Amino acid sequence: MAVIHRTTLEPTKLELLTAWLPSRPWYGGAPRPELSNAGGFRLDDPSGEVGIEFLVVNDTSGPRPAAYLVPLTYRGAPLDGAGHALVGTMEHGVLGRRWAYDGCHDPVLAARLAALIEGTAPAQAQRVSDTPDHEIVRSYTGPAPAAAVFPAVTDTPEATELTAPGGTVLRLVRALSPAPDGAPLLPPTAVGHAAGPWQQPDGTRVQGLFAVLHTGADD
Image (cartoon, rainbow, N blue to C red; front, side, top):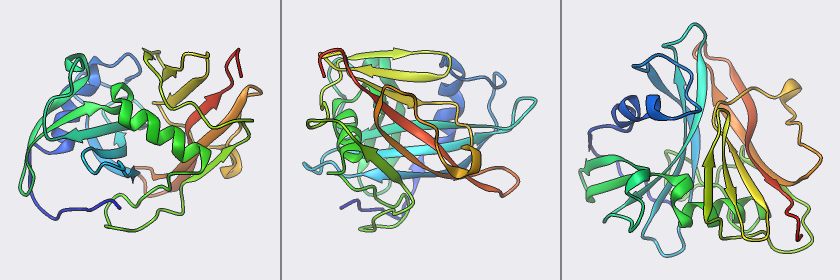
């Protein structure tokens, strides 16, 4: 289960993201974001080696506030071949140096997110140890176990798409939008999804899609 350490981080996650977000094609704010925590959740790595967090941040630097989904993984050593996905390094008061990656490029996060959608990896609370997060909702209607390997990663102006060898696509929404009446609308090709809440800058709590699993040509 996810263990949350009450300690220091230098730099903080928001400081890392302030420098990193403007380089992303799906970021629509000012050159220097004005970020605050808005929500999120964690997933467990069965090996206990990789920290997995889905962070939601509000950005008030643009003409209108925006919320972004930022999946991150935290590792105790560099991930081979993932230098392009490095968000930055942090000094953790308990664990020492940690390498923070854009989790869409980390195979551990991709596999665990697919397992969450399938229903075999429960979401964990973002800030409390050993506590399931029952506000994260998911569905899966596929005829077989969900794909676990997504070697192709593509950023678009709205999302990041992870593609499995059979053509199945795991689409992570980056610029979040509240769902009408709190009920996410899924596209016709969707076989699964994950959704959850976050808090807007005015304190309003909303819910929307985080990820959608689309069927592949070979499914």
